[in-house]
Image (cartoon, rainbow, N blue to C red; front, side, top):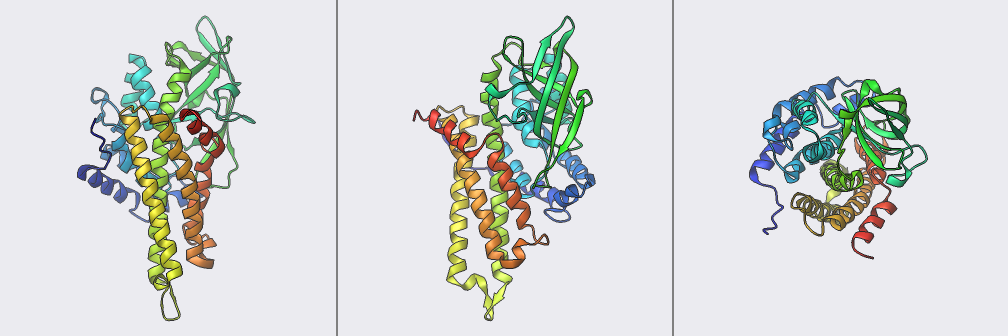
Length: 375
């Protein structure tokens, strides 16, 4: 098998179009507006990204998509991370779409894949519960079989959300303690409460389900082992998140480098001093090492490589650490102004901590990697 996970000229060209959409005003204008409760710029960007074909990248052609693989999502996810978008594109394109393609009924595919490709549907992932962790064993939300379908009860917390989210993929346990997966429409949720977060650029909500009636057609992957389905889909989601972290790190290194060129001390740019030169060089090496591992992890997912699991979880652990370090160093290189809201540094610092614990803590991630390696 030819192991080539470098990006093609066409993929890099598509990246430039995505970046143009996300930086028409300024690279963080969308997220700064979002933090103030204004999603107008986010909606405009989403419409333009849909016109570019972003929403159909991983969707089969017969449902209105382009039918490309995980590697083709890399430039898009990196640009979304560069702009620290407050979105659920990763959950939709890298999680929901693969599950629907492989395990959805024809009715579900017709309803959701076409809608996603058109930009009309975005799906959030509702897994974590209050006091729980990202583990199948801690799922306490219940679903009871009825003559007409199912009844859903429970609470999900820290669900990534925007006003554009139309549905949620919800994990629940049935009477036999078997894990099941459902697509629940936003209007069916009993209560949606915004949760406080130190990262104001990404909204998290708590979902309450009180005797919510679901039809049998809302059950996803009905004939499969949901734990196995989740394990595979999570690999796809994790590499998308990894790509977003790479995009953020790339932006941070660029910001620090540009600042070092214009900030003068003792009559010359601070970038000429060895102390700053060496720090910037270290950041660049850290970034490119992380990028190579991220691209390789995505390649293993697309090609279903034997070392896929250990590579993906190892990459998530390394990238989360690298993101935190690069964000902290960027603040330091900017000096006192780096701590202010005027600059973008603090936005990336906060997002780095979100991704550190999203889909599992660093301890959980390293444990998964170690288990996959047989340690």
